[in-house]
View 1 (cartoon, rainbow, N blue to C red):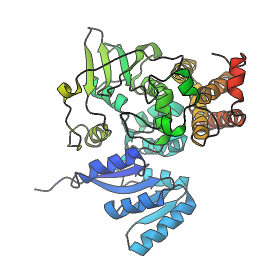
View 2 (view 1 turned 90 degrees about the vertical axis):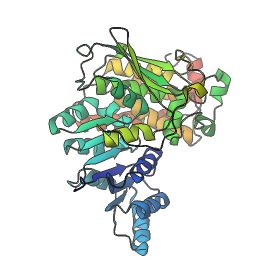
View 3 (view 1 turned 120 degrees about the horizontal axis):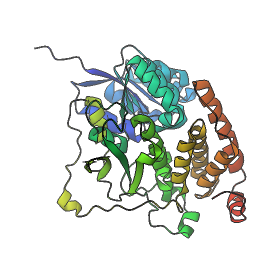
View 4 (view 1 turned 135 degrees about the vertical axis):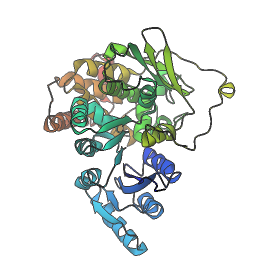
Amino acid sequence: MTLPRAVSVAVLGSTGSIGVNTLSVIAQHPQRFEVFALAANSDVETMFAQCEAFRPRYAVLANESAAARLAARVGDAGLDCEVMGGAAALLDVATRPEVDAVMAAIVGAAGLASTLGAAKAGKKIMLANKESMVMAGPLLIDTARASGSALLPIDSEHNAIFQALPANFARDMDAAGIRRLILTASGGPFLHASAEVLAGATPDQACAHPKWSMGRKISVDSATLMNKGLEVIEAHYLFGAKPEQIDVVIHPQSIVHSMVEYVDGSVIAQMGNPDMRTPIAHALAYPQRVEAGVKRLDLAGAGRLDFTTPDCERFPCLRLAYQALRAGGSAPVYLNAANEVAVDRFLNHEIAFNAIAEIVEKVMDDLPSQRVESIEQILAADGSARAAAAKLASRGSGLAERRAAGGLGH
């Protein structure tokens, strides 16, 4: 009996938490999956270790000087792996004809070009880069539809919704008898923090997530609830849900990953331990199921499941995301770009935690939403918002004083 050919996978963002977990699942099923390419930004040591363990045909680092160092390491070790550098190489490996599936896990706007390229090339895309959908949702959906590319969500919330939807769901909530989608949020490390604690929060505190092990940028987004806001926008594009059909509830235990409510009153939830290997394994093997190495859920041990309404006064980023979604056009691009700049400045100790939301709000107020239909228009809007956010961030703590004086909207 001849075994089917292993699925050839390109892992974009291989050195981050999603990439590492993806490789963990692949390692459990060497007969089913093989690593064709690994790609990341600049982490030479982690990438070299991954090249030794998985023997990809290609390894890419977007940072060209880091790629040169990796090439030297790979050459000295005698590995049969071609090392490439630069952003264009990310697109190259994502669209190679040998690739069956692409894990799109490059954080932020940097992952847009390769994700869109993979969609155009008709690849099975495991979408962990929510920013691509936030920035270019309609373009990405239309491109995937035209090429026959499959978009499988990796975010635990969207993957949960995907699993709870009817078979052959066609982005029509009404036709499927769906009343609303309910995204769950852990609440992050500052769920019960006072305004004073939030004002003085440090990057290390913001990155100390109580349930999930994630990269620093997404950890800060979780702390501000911007991550949930981006997920609201992503859910709108992925599932065709109107803003009023997407609700968010705080669920600190992170056991119920999200829910779908139907018009007959049924609510179908996907549950499991908080481990990203579950949605990754689901997408890798879809429509089949494979072992992910995840600890079995002990509901009796969990004891209780709590749900509360998010506080958009203390965490205004969620409100701003809904605002951007309703405005449409370039507004989600502005939201994402301003947030990326502000989070980076916060992680570098240049602005306060509360200034993240203030910068995003001011950029959205100052830049009128425009129609965007091409990648060029999207990138132009992204650039404008980044420039505006950087200018605001350079003023540092002055934002907080101007808010107190009534200079920024609430």
